[in-house]
Image (cartoon, rainbow, N blue to C red; front, side, top):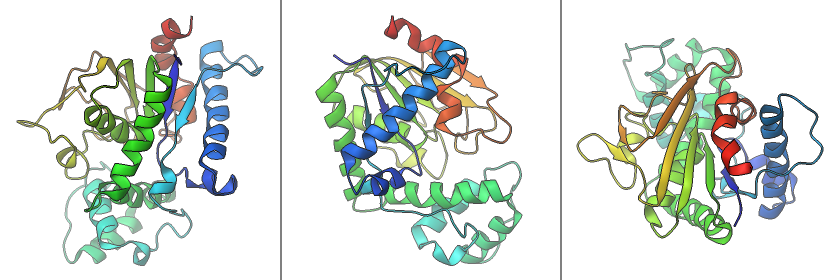
Length: 277
């Protein structure tokens, strides 16, 4: 039985490409990074000497297609589904607010022009990958869930740590495969509660405005940076039942969503130490 399985977030197709279109190569490269990031937080910054914490990364980015973050403000690169996700997400940002008028294409351009470059580049990855996962027809969605289920079933981990879009994939996977049991699910920077983008489209659908912890999960811990533009809202207890512990943190005013910052934060280390003893 493995201790920890990771489920990655957005922007990870490049690992597949750099590994020669190899899922195993992408998994290995990402696991090595996750081990280093976790070690930094667990050891108080001591040098990493090859310690292993992550059994495997459940990899699914290749199923969503390649989405590049160059020319982040080029609205014409967004298809209709991506624009819909982008606008629904962007109007929830404090820095943007309400006041959208005109056609969706024009609104997307207006929003992008108002965004800082870093946020616009995040959008160029977040919106198309979320749209690809949630798209009608569901082939990518079904494939991603099967990929995650296969890794969990093979290793039977005590803990699943899921970052960003990976928290959505992990949540739906654990509901779709209720024979899978984990002692602890940790969601990091999760968009699970994001209205008009993710929440209403979840499978299974929320009931009376609330989602529920998957039945095979013994404990659920949610950790989010208060200013993470992917974790809207950062606190999930307002829309999900069964979250045992929730911690809102301040990771970095610029670098508020990367898995490196989340894996190295003390709040996560506190939750993982009992499973690594």
